[in-house]
Amino acid sequence: MVVALLLGSCAASKPESSAPAGGEQAAAATAPGTIALTEQMEKRAGIQVTTAQKRPLVNRSLFSSTIEAPTDRSGVVTASVQGVVTRVLADVGQTVARGQTLAYISTPMLAEAQAGYFSAVAKVQEAHAQVQLTDSRVQLARADYERESALYKKGISAQREQQAALARLDGTLSELAAAKSTEAAARSSLQAARARLNALRQATGSSITDELALKSPVSGIVVSRMIQPGQVVNPATAGTSNAEDHLFTITSLAEVWAMLEVPQSEVAGLKLGAPVQFTSEVAPGEAFKGRIIRLGETFDPQARTASVRVAIANPHGTLKPGMLVLAQAISGGSARPVLAVPTAAIQQIDGKDVVFVRTAPHRYRQQPVVLGERNAQLTQIVSGLTAGTEVVSDGSFVLKSEALKATLEGE
Image: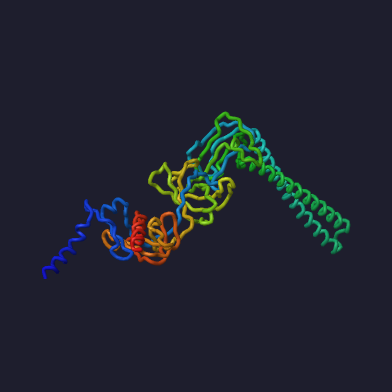
């Protein structure tokens, strides 16, 4: 009986005598596939644990770009004739409405065009009055002819009287045709005179002036002004977009554009209408929402990038053309929530994908998993885990080393 007690006492005290000094116990496999670490070993390995949970698995790419004015909401003001600037009524940063006068230039061509218009109006009125007068004479001549024809049939009037009335009717009908032709020619001249005024972007008005109003073609903000009183301006060259000819540039900044240079390998993952989030140093902490409106406008064969145009909502006008912004775009992946863990949690042992599950404090178990989609941060778990399971996100490589060491010791 005493011998049995002594043997039991020796067996119970053996693990305590083999523990290393300092209180740190070496990793030991307490069960097949399970690894035990001390608190000090966990700190040294940088062990961090996260929970497997469902979340959208999308790829987010970062790009830097520059804000541009939207061309479909912008307009420029140019001079249609040569002249001298007399007054400037708008400046950079000012909000203007479509049709609002921005400046005046003095040009004799306007006075000539207006004089020609008023003269054409007068000729049309004169020609129209002549048509009405001649038409009245035609009605009288027709009535006279009908009366003479009736008297001739009754034998009261001679045939020559009837023929004379017919000749007078034919003559007035010819005069009416000539008057209508004159009126048509006068109206054509009036249309030409009105077209000359339209080319000057000038209304007909009621008086002659040599001051030509330069008006805004769109509603928006004046983003550039290249005009001063006393400056001589010349007509813009037809068919060109020379910025030197632009006296004013107006644009609506309620929505602005940005061009993203996207690597060729990522273009396929972007879709029209896909959301893009923007940040800028001019508004720290504020996010601007955008959407892709055009894919692959141009391709750079040297950089292997394609241009992707994005429209950005800018309701308060915070973003201005030329400002730098940082864009975060979603390119591919799954927008629906899927079970995922940090990509750093995935390890390979014997050609199989595994994660390390925390089963208890300082205890970890190797768990085979089947992987799905992934991005730079997360990897989908198709099978092998359930939502809420605690897995090692950082330091999993140390656990892999311990697992391999235990396998070699077992062999």
